[in-house]
Image 1: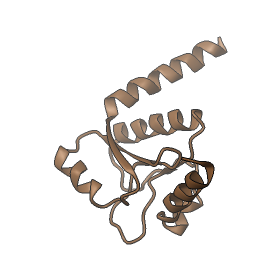
Image 2 (image 1 turned 180 degrees about the horizontal axis):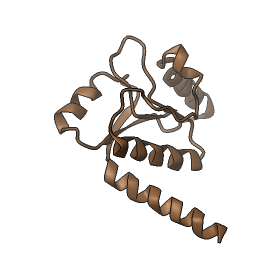
Image 3 (image 1 turned 135 degrees about the horizontal axis):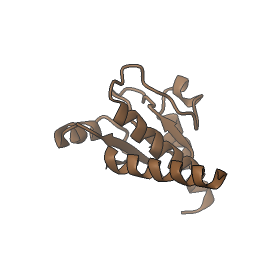
Length: 129
């Protein structure tokens, strides 16, 4: 894929996001109705990891003409990451039908992300000592 094709794909991906959410590029946003702390911490771990890799990210974006919100949208790789905590497989499959087709949807376990976050925090603390 050449540079122009990559840029066109990126523009198509960003244009699928509602205009109000486009202003939150690389911002960490908490959806007000979220009640599970483990889910939020796991999303934050994923967000940190992707930002450290230099990816362009949207957290909790909404899409035109579609229901629902993606947990984390990585524009760089055209991937929607759905953090799975207590959700069932059927819930994830249903979400796949609500997102634009240009994105790959990857469910990821909250526990795995939280372990990664604790490692990052431990490394940061040990560097300061």
